[in-house]
Each structure stands twice: as structure tokens, then as C-alpha cells.
Length: 297
Image (cartoon, rainbow, N blue to C red; front, top):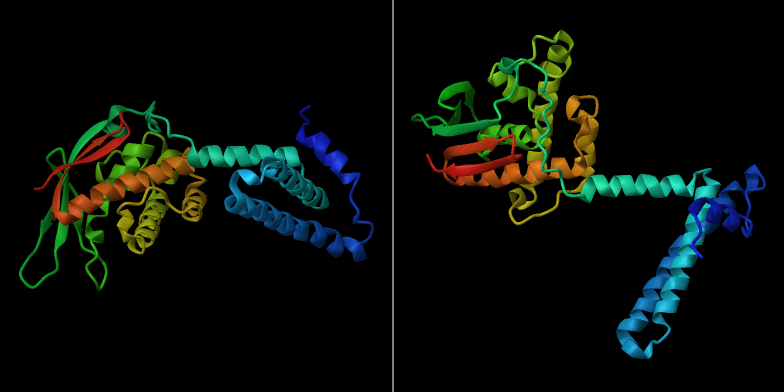
């Protein structure tokens, strides 16, 4: 017979041998179940070691695994009770977290600027050209144009060592394509939502633009020490949580960790191609939530 978490937690607490009876006993009451978690984890690993060694001869393997998992669950419930936490809520919050982290991103394109005049909305499709310019005695810089119209200004690496950050507008394009969000690209395209003054100030203003640049720089620094994400399929969850925290008060706050991971990985996939070819054309499709490299200049 199955049992719900609430009932299990209540029943498990009745068998607690180290109750939190006083302030003096509080530390002991907490440390015992925590040590129990470590001990039972070791027991579980030990049973698996026996299974690897003995194979089918370890006939009680599944029973032992079930028993050790049960002991782990008891200690988890006990720690939750000692901290006045609800195990059922913890389970639900964990499901929400892992779903947002690993569930496939929706193919439906977010339209954060829907309801605004066409002149204040992102184009749903764009062909972007990044061209590297190098003058004698100067380091290379990059110029961007969208559908044939030059936007923004010349960008350099802003680093002592040339590292390709001059092409970082690719990341703004990726955020726009995958997340429907990029206050910097919106400013470049002169698509700020001025018909709604508060939106213009908060979502499209200077602070939001600085945050986006901060996200780009943070992701770039992470990528630098991870082969610029070449061959990498997952981004560190700590980085994704930091980015979500930085952007939580903005409209893009609805984006999941999986959404951000996709935007970062696909952005760097295009960035690596652009860097290798010293520029090129990029197709940005907000309807399909896609960004792809079209070819060298």
C-alpha cells in the first residue's frame, strides 16, 4: 500500500530516538539524522559494490537497495521535521525545479512584446551580418547590420588578449531568438516600447541593458574555461540560477533554466562559427525559436 509524504513524515517522527526535547539537545537532535544520511548512503554504495563483485550471486541485492533507500527516506523525513519543513512541499518544489531545469523547452515562441505597435516589436525574422574591420596598426573591430541596415557601433574585444568578445552581439541575437528578450537589440533596432512609459523605463531602459550585458559577460567568462562550450551539452546549474536571479524582476524572469541553457548553448554554437570565419551572416527566427549561421562574409 502506498503512503503519502505527510503521513510518512508524521509516522516516522514517532520512532525518533533523539527528539528535540530542549535547546541543549537541539544540536544532537540534528546531527544524528544528518550522520545517518551519510551512513546509509555508504551502505547503499556497499550493496552496489557487492552486486558488482558477485553479480547474480548477490540474490538479495534489490531487497537490500529497497531497504537502504527506506532508511535514507526515514533520515530525510527526520531532518525535515527537525527543521520544521514539510516533506511533501519539499518533494513538489524539487519536481518543479528539475522540470524547469531539464524539461524540453517549449517550441512555442515567447512574444513578450505582443500587444505593442508593430514599430515597437521585434521583427520575427532577421538576417544579421557581422563584418570584421581591421585598420593598419589597430586591433580588429566588428560592425553589425540587420536586414541591410547598419545598427549599433563598432565593437572591440575590450580585453588585453583578443578573445572574440567583439562578436558578442551574437549572444543578444540568441537571447532574442530563444527567449524573445534583448533590451540591447531592441535599442539597436529602435524598437523600445515608448508607448508604455513604465515598460520603456524598466524593461527597455539602461538598467535592463546593463543586466543583459552582465549576463553575456558572465556566460562568456564561464565558456572561456570550458572550451567555449565546444562539445558541451549542459551548462552548470549554478550559473543558470545566477542568471535567473539577475533577471528575475524583468519580463524574461519567466524563462526556465532550460530556456537559458538553450539560449547560451545555441548562441555559442553560432559564435564559434562567426569567430572562425571572422564574421558572416546569421538568421534569427523568433517564430521558430532558432538562430543559425548562414555562412562566411
